[in-house]
Structures are given as structure tokens and as C-alpha cells.
Image (cartoon, rainbow, N blue to C red; front, side, top):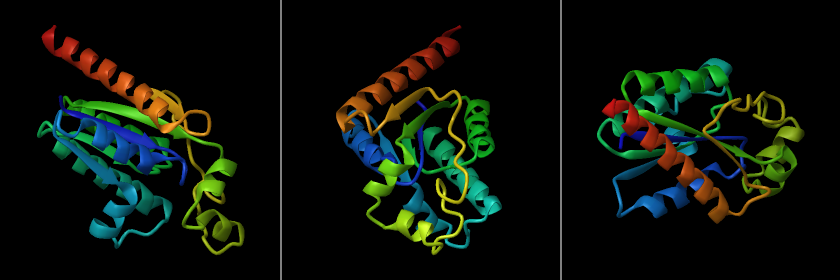
Length: 182
């Protein structure tokens, strides 16, 4: 199937961990590629900053890349903060116009839990004013209102989250096949 699993959430909510585990789960069963927001930004879009316009452009670019891969029958797992609903909606629309399946996964954890998990120390730096515009601290994260699935990584372990995501993926792909067959 031609699908993008779009994992969005606060920094340190568990997006990259779940993304890596999803790739490990599906490798050998189907073509799969993980697009991690930090790595993609660093390697391909280093000219983008963290102003709102740059964050939106980053999401657009990652969305286009994901759609290109999905169109080649690759399951694309994207782990990216993507703080703005409008940018995520644009990526969803891009996929749907191309006849691709888009599964939005809200990876949720309370900001306090994310701060405790933060191995980069970004939350502490943001609290001290050293990281301006930090999503979840001094800048907004617009949580999805109607994701295909929401996983709370403060309540569920990795395996439980993977099962919930897998069910949502199978349901979405089954629904998209039914539309094609009609």
C-alpha cells in the first residue's frame, strides 16, 4: 500500500522511538523508510530556522518527500513535531490528492513527562530562556483534533503503542482499498 504514518507530538514525546520500532516491525514484510524530523532538517534543510514560516516549510518539504516515497509503494514513517495543524492538514491533503493513504498518529505525553525524558536538555534550556520558541514551552503545539490514532506514551509502553498504531494502519489501508474497489 501507498501509506505515510505521520507521528506528531511534543519534543521527547516518543515519536522517534516509535518510528524506529515501527520500521523494525515492518522490515522484511514491506518496503519501509523512516524520516526523522531532526535528521531530515539537519541533513537536507539546514537553511531553515525555527520561525513559524520555516517550521511550516520544513513540514511541507518532509510531506512532499514522504508522498514521493509512498507513491513508490514504500511505507513511510515520519517522526516530526509538526506543531501547526494547518501544515499537517496541507500534508494530508497532498497525500489524498495523490491517492495515498495518510495516517496521523498523535504521540502524546504531558510536557512534564517530555521534559523528564529530554536527553538533549532542551526543555531545561528553554526554561532558562536559552532556547527561544521551544515547542511546548514558549511556542505552541496544536494537538491534532481528529488523528487516526492517539497514543499516550506516558500511559502505554512501546509495544502497546505499536499495536494501536498497527491497528490504525491496517484499518486505514483496508478502507483505502475498499474505496479503490468501488
